Length: 541
Ligand SMILES: C[S@@+](CC[C@H](N)C(=O)[O-])C[C@H]1O[C@@H](n2cnc3c(N)ncnc32)[C@H](O)[C@@H]1O
Image 1 (cartoon, helix red, strand yellow):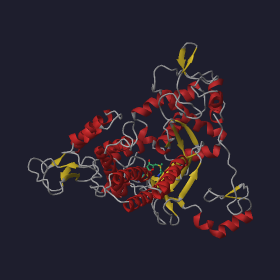
Image 2: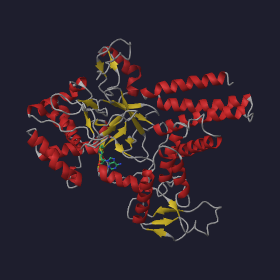
Image 3: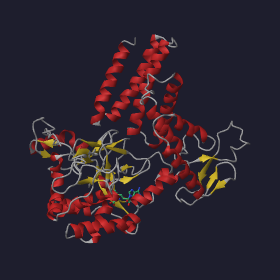
Image 4: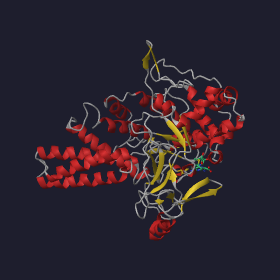
């Protein structure tokens, strides 16, 4: 594994190498105390540390803006306190987290293994990486050898569940202050202790730490660490999805959830530093929030996930609104109003929850007396999501069929329809045989319509500079450029018309670039697109 490149920080004031970090925001450096004072007077006092942590009975600890925060501002940048593989999954390298492929060793296929503890790794460099040293020594000293071997592609290995907690526990000696910080995070162990997962962890994780490794921890501390991960860890992702890690960021852990969040987060560099970015302007005193779940789920599903995974009941504005800001994302059409007697002219009435904060509440028609029980809604949702999950993502037909098949029940913004539309958005314009230049006119129009529909929804549920809006804008402008070219070739628009439409695309592209350019891996794509469109604007032929 190549070690991360070390960038030398530069002084905010004189741009010379600097070694003093601002203690408030930990984002900027100075070469001296004098320049720190100067930098503060010259404006850093308005930018520094935009939040504080407060406590309330309802929300526990939570982050609040200490000043007005601008859209797109980086509120926090933080190193992971501890990082490890997810609970289970196919074989991954314990050092860099990369998914492993087997190789042929003495006529059989297997992974490269650490020569000391036998855990699958990328190779000798990862085996020697700092992150793996302490755990490797303990396992080796206790003569423990990992038994994972290649059997079939993508076989899920449950053994990974011990590594992340072990790393946190080992910090008690190696970094006691950070260990204390981690142990002071919310755990919800009391809520989880009797769940099937924790019964299993009691058997294997606790046994591994105490009996196999002989470490001096009690059952409670071991399970508490596992539960702290479950409550606070971020699922670290890399763009190509080849790494499966989770990490705890102590300060970012203070961010509470909201179903219409005002931040998004990204991971920077090989060290997976977390950066939190304001997606909308945040006023002084407002809570700084992120989403712990997916915004494109209805309230029934979101609240179920939050209850199971994060042990709380969300009562945010969206959860209290039976229409979810007028999107009706969790609703279905009323089968009576829309049945054989529906006139098809008026807005078709929907079933909405009679009390969205109560998952057992009935779902009632907005117009007539028809209602269904919440469990019927759950069953319906479950059955259709199972059906949707089974659709292979190798072509658009089955997704289009799904939308058509349920069009009398599921309205265009229903969350199940939205999942199908998101899949279509990826296929149209990207998949082989469906690239933008290959799309026939009617499918190019379909792609444009999908972008507009999803953008409208994003404006309600993930407004501003969310990644969701950024990627749809990027998709939309690319499709618009192709449409413009076709319209010009078909002599549907004049040269002036081309210029107008391309300018419109450029505006969208600029907005997408504003949103996405903080993500280092997006920069080359954005630059190439801007250059291409600029060239095209100058010489449309
Ligand atoms: C990552 S922690 C956030 C910090 C936490 N509030 C604390 O005091 O340590 C996640 C936990 O915070 C609480 N929490 C987060 N968002 C919440 C919300 N919107 N309403 C109520 N509790 C929330 C839940 O207990 C959740 O499991």
